[in-house]
Length: 211
Image 1 (cartoon, helix red, strand yellow):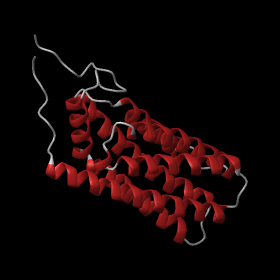
Image 2 (spheres, rainbow, N blue to C red; image 1 turned 90 degrees about the vertical axis):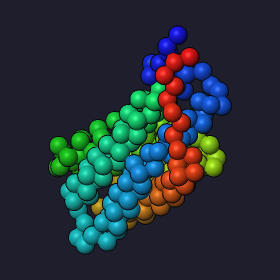
Image 3 (cartoon, one colour; image 1 turned 30 degrees about the horizontal axis):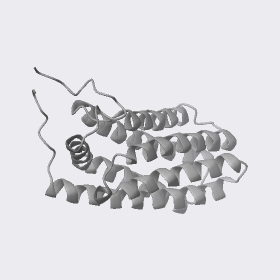
Image 4 (tube, rainbow, N blue to C red; image 1 turned 45 degrees about the horizontal axis):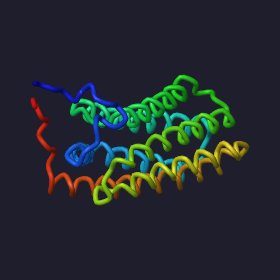
């Protein structure tokens, strides 16, 4: 009888077994470029935030909107690829939507105040980081599980920091954002290189067409 995994559990992708775990990790490794793109975007955002002279909330908001859009699109692309293979995709998809929504909010409200910007950015990082941490649970250790988990944890901690200390100046906010974004970007690039190495060694498994 022919079966399809596309309609499987979006959290786990279907009944757990070693073959499914191997396939899931191979798919994540195949999407290493999306994580590398996110890492590069984060580092670029961090450099701009750290070294941009005469920083203002408006300039930070616009740069953040671009970064969030790139990050969210790359995350959703990875989720769509996983869904097509019948693997877990919901955590990645939701994380991408949260990032795009935060970026769109910033882009369409350029006159946003510092307090609201910090609250939106902080909340987005907490939710997105938690979802990223959840997606790390199914990643094998040699594929960079702990790097993905660290990236999610960094986002949650920084998001909570912003939510708990919202009243800070534009320059100080820019410094903190820059340091955080560069650190997160480095973690994601390391993860991407780990996944790329596994992808070269173990290409994605063929998707079964029948049973």
